[in-house]
Image (cartoon, rainbow, N blue to C red; front, side, top):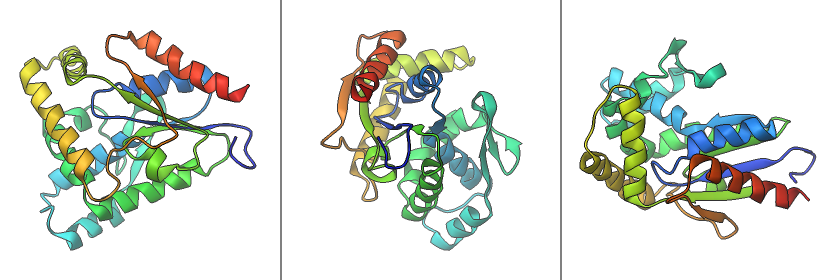
Amino acid sequence: MSEGNNYPKIAIDGPAGAGKSTVAREVSRRLKVKYLDTGAMYRAITLKVIRENIDLADSEALERVLRKTKIGLGEDKRVFLDGEDVTEEIRSSHVNELVSPVSCISPVRRHLVSMQQDIADQPGGIIMEGRDIASRVMPDADYKIYLDASIEERAKRRCKEQLEKGIALSLEEVAAVIKKRDHIDSRREDSPLTIVEDAVVVDTTGMTFDQVVDKVVEVINEGMR
């Protein structure tokens, strides 16, 4: 267990569409540990970049945006950008297309990683999910879990999520976006998506949501005995 803390630090990493957010939220509820959706933070910054029409190659403009942007995470998974509730908009297709390129930019990663580490250092334990949690944000995590699934499985899940929001996308279209994100996330120079040596890998292909949550909780409970 983390030094000076009777509550665990839990890191969940994995590629797009692996179910990290929904699984982490349920594990958080079951274990009564606070949860941080780091992906929502990157999506909020991406939305701000889109709204401000910032050229991703303009580092000075990006730095200015980062300095003046406030991101808030509230109850019931609500996400606030400079005080505005943008929970639905950060999941839109135009944000989906740009979030990986924005996330690759070093100043953006440094800024948000610093924020995430400050939150992780607060007492009470935490479960945090993303792509570089175990490798960079919380290398001292007590439990490191990597959720994975086939591209087809991940695409089906994303299609279902979008359909529930009234957005109909083809399986091929979603799979292409996921493949592109995998390529960008795993090859970026700053904090690429990676599986750390001491992570427990859980392939969720063919598993139900409850089965995945049960497996993650089992890994954590076994470590706490």
